[in-house]
Length: 327
Image (cartoon, rainbow, N blue to C red; front, side, top):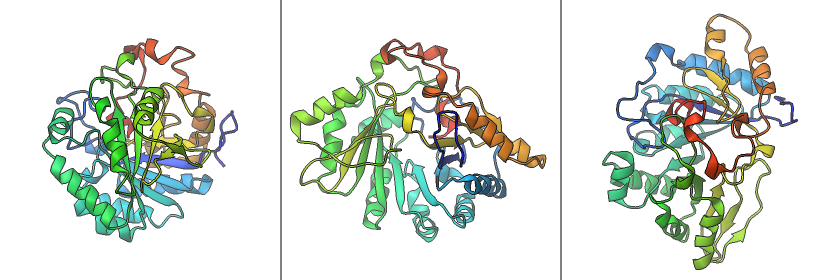
């Protein structure tokens, strides 16, 4: 078991494979001139496998591959097949633009669930948000994944004055497709120019939805980051990940591994443990993992205290950009 000082058992590891991405969403990547990690600093396939195996031996039962865009790595299929040999549930977060190239391998590796990042149902707004013309390709690949039997979750970052007017459109999508839409509150990271006024919080999302729909709460995993709801007669569900307005830290079971091999015990943690350097120098990793997790703060990396999210100084946050942490 991987226990912290609050008796939280950590069974879920998110591994970022790269900070490369073929989209340029402003809340994730600081700007077009972002300096990507040098290849020599990235974990290689055998190193990812070796580090993951240690976590699995210590009790991890679920691994999610993230980025950047994980499918942008040319050796993605090699990494995936290596990890598929471990006794874990293997999942993926992707923007879906390259998904058509890897669906066969994903199914071969036993991946059944895909989290797909999509913040708008408008081609014009997609271009404004991502600075790339890939909306049609994204939607085609989502449709193909659904048709091939993958459990598709749509991750939608909701921002006040940007796309909050599309909440009902995403809920309407759940009528005809068995997708799970997860609305995510806008979070502060280095370079994303976050302010509290941009957060469209959980209660406002629910107010919007319940004006139009009857939403029924569903049973959920105690470690889940959100409470799922379903509109009667709809195939799919929706939920709200309320990191800023109603954090879910008490049930957290997650750890993160950045593309350059640094372990983070929280999305907002200041401290990191360099597992890749330890591996390359032949040091046992368990001591680094356990020391890191024992330093985990009770709530939000220990950075925000009890300050209401509307009053948080986003520019004072000590952290990486979202793309260099891993989504």
